[in-house]
Image 1 (cartoon, rainbow, N blue to C red):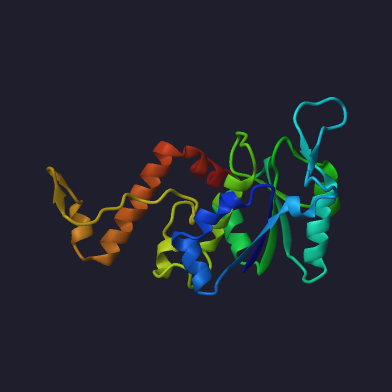
Image 2: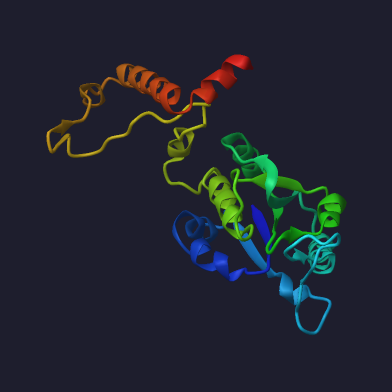
Length: 229
């Protein structure tokens, strides 16, 4: 997968993409991440990319020119399957969306900053707007990192144990069952006997039951939504 990131502060990404799973995915040749500094596409000698919004609203907006210039340059070399804009008013990110995006070959992610971006960017490129929650961040960079991490770990060959990602919470519409590792007893707390039994059928049944109980207690909306469907 190729990921092109447009940002006013691309340095935010550097430490994260050079760490852990994302770094390994790049080293394995599974993912290519290119950072594009929007200031390099400014239409003025000072490198400014923002201006005050029409109508007297507060804050500053990223202008059309630098974003159009960068995206048009990318599109002149290759077709991109999705142009994503990280925005608080987008569709809320969930596992289904991450699964779908992980199957794509190349995407562009636009990170807003300041007050956001000129609406004409979203309209012209028919952006797929994604939110990571009902709150506002200083910019779209942190949200983009959440999205990137959630999709990269699903790409075959990125995680050593392929079944690990399949067992994650939300993969089957439920929260993951409780997990335990060695030692079998710690400060008087014991690992459930069934997990030590070596019986795959009993273990699977226990995990399914605990997954349901946990989801019902913490996220009953997931079960209600399933019943409504």
